[in-house]
Length: 420
Image 1 (cartoon, rainbow, N blue to C red):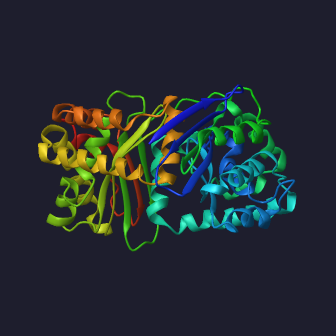
Image 2: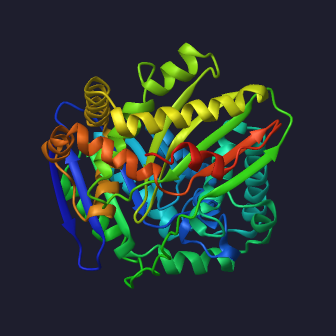
């Protein structure tokens, strides 16, 4: 692996990782602009913009955009998250220049045609409707809203039907001008790539990106709370959570290992107690998500309505016990699983491009493999337990979707964890 980074005069950063032995390359343009950067009136706009980028430019219509990459066997796609939006392609080594040209075209010359805009709004309305039919995903939207009430970070990425219908070309352009700037952008490439060539393409193709600073990000304020939504489902979906840690927090790695140790696989205490010993759920797992200035920790499962209260009680008790007596074996397993996941990502050019872009946006640099593995290896059992205990002392969040027979409150959960 050979990571190279260049910051161009306007602030645009180019980072590459040449991976010997590969004949394909993954390239992406990443903007530090996602759903939490939206105002109330812009809710869902980041995701709409991602869609509209592929609907026609001054040089290519929607079909030509797709054919430009697919005719050479490549893939072209995009994704919106809470804190960034990514546009990426995977092509053969010799088509890197073409991929860069197409990505620049859709990001600097999109027309946002009125007819295409109205058509794509209908597509997104279908996507929003599909989310309502996916309880395993919908419950996390509810969870985020309860954890961060009335804040952009707690809003669904897709937006609302009412909001999407109201968007105009002017709304899109104003958002673009504010957030799609050179200083807010990272171009990342991994695989069969040459840094000098990618840098040259970036200099010439993205020269028109605005040079001003992006708008400041409103800080996240985790509050916790409860949201219980009654819906006719075969299973009741449950997410129980607490405040997590940001990327920059010194205990972030310990929190991640705690979550993985307590509920990261079939051998974990959470899975063994909930699924294997009691048969309360088909699947159950813990998570720890980090953001720039906040985080979320918890566990999720689906169960019969009559088992929900017991499921929550057992799951919370497992977390509380782990914060005090997590075993060395469980911690070492979590460390090994985390390292395998990290190293596996290094073997994929797509994952590697995403990783180096994300690290550049968060830390201002790419973290070395040795640095990350070293931080994981250095964690002690006491530090992992302490991180878990600190998470569980924060206000709980409860999200339940399905048949809610007898509500479980944040007070019930806090009482079970009183001794942690």
